Amino acid sequence: MQLKQAFVCAQCTVRLNRRPLLRCQSFVSQFISKRSNSHVAQSDRPVRVAIVGSGPAGFYAAYRLLAKQEDAIVDMYEKLPVPFGLARYGVAPDHPEVKNCEDKFTEVAESTRFNFVGNVDIGHDLPLAALKPHYDAIIFAYGATEDKELGIPGEKALHSVHSARAFVGWYNGLPEHRDLDPDLSGENAVIVGQGNVALDVARILLTDVETLQKTDIADYAVEKLATSRIKRVRVVGRRGPLQASFTIKEIREMLQLPDVSFDPIPDDIFPPEEVVSALPRAQKRLMQLLAKGSANDPLKSSKSWSLDFLLAPDSLHWSPDYPYHLSHVKFSRNELDPSDPYSPSSKVFPKHLSSGKRAQVNLPASVFFRSVGYKSLPLPGLEDLGIDFDTRRGIIPNDGFGRVTSLSNKGQPEALPAGSLVSHLPGLYCAGWVKRGPTGVIASTMTDAFTTADTVVQDLSKSAGSTSLLNAPDHGSGLGWDGVKIEAQRRGLRPTSWTDWQRIDAAERESGQRKGKPRDKLGRVEEMLKVLD
Image (cartoon, rainbow, N blue to C red; front, side, top):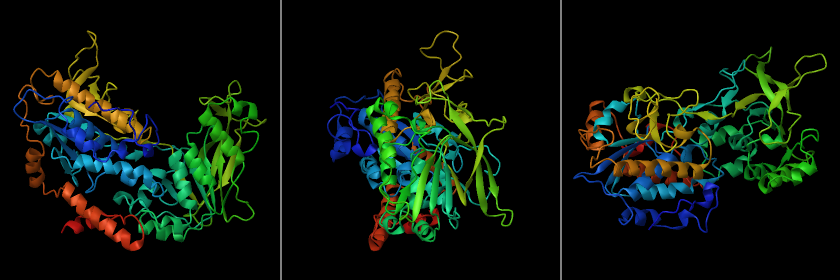
């Protein structure tokens, strides 16, 4: 049975072939047990692979490895006691269908060749050096843990200024953002960035609490949102409508919010009809939807939102009378390249007044969110493995297929031109956002993780009888978690297993059922571990 990479769950936002992968209830279990197309290493012990990170990239890599390498045993490490990463903590609570990928991840975890090791922060609680002797390969799939900054005055203020990443984590119950406590006492919210995450933030701010209560949003977030006085949300971008990165599904949801009106986009910014009619189908539908706007009457709606284009954030300003109250955000106006203003890649230039001064505008704001992208950070100890993290791009350097590379001649220049300064670091791989940057949806992450897993299998098949890619020629201990566990115990760590997660999951679902919601997430690590006592 040959796996079809084009079979992608419809909930992962991409429709390919004829039917979604998740419809096959036991597909993963059946495929993992197949032997006809899998590789068997020439060794008397299993191939031990560590995956750092339990989000979609990590689980899809594990799934593919177990499917194609029949003697592989995968140990997945996660810093939180619970799995699923961005699928659990990054997907909006009113988008439960996107989280259906967790069903497939659960099937993967039920394999006897899979171990979940939660509540162990690799690089912090446990050094990477403790893993290396016991594994034949390590896949880094720990995602992006920071957000990009704007670099403007006032951005680092402790009050009324938040990253979209932190706000999303807050309402989704991510422990590190449990105490965010955003100030929603004013009427005006400004969000810089026009991607889908920015629209998630806007939608949560504008959605009525009764609707949110039926989702798995954190209870404390509902309580806070119930007291919100936000009436006006601006989603601001530095380019034009055709260059924005939001998609039609999220725009449609915003336009259909009850009791929320939408400010029409000014004619001098919106592309003319002859340009819209010539656009590709998807982009044309999006522009037509924006032109149509919302059916809600602004005079009868209690809240409103807008898409503000061609504005670059300049600085944040506070009230002179109340220094902890944000007053407004100053923006500098941009204009599109006049030679090609309607290209998706059109550049923007500063707009100047006749006096020569930069054109600027102040937008009232009582709370400010930046949503301009995520970035990955290096794990402590990567350098001990020879990995030179690319801080500019926020990725682990790799060859595009998942093999970690080095420009310092620390690895093996296999199959590369003579004299090349690029080398592979044997046994080290990466997948997901830490491999390609924080772009794409769950479907693209799946394809990316499959590529990395296939690369591991390919390298094992060419390893000349040696099981270990990471510890050739002595092959390493091959103990995997059984070997690492000794060091974890010595350090007093309290790792969680998949069985432990199932108990936490059951407790959350039971509590949620009593409240009329899918689950009641535990928002602190201590609360999760208490379930296990």
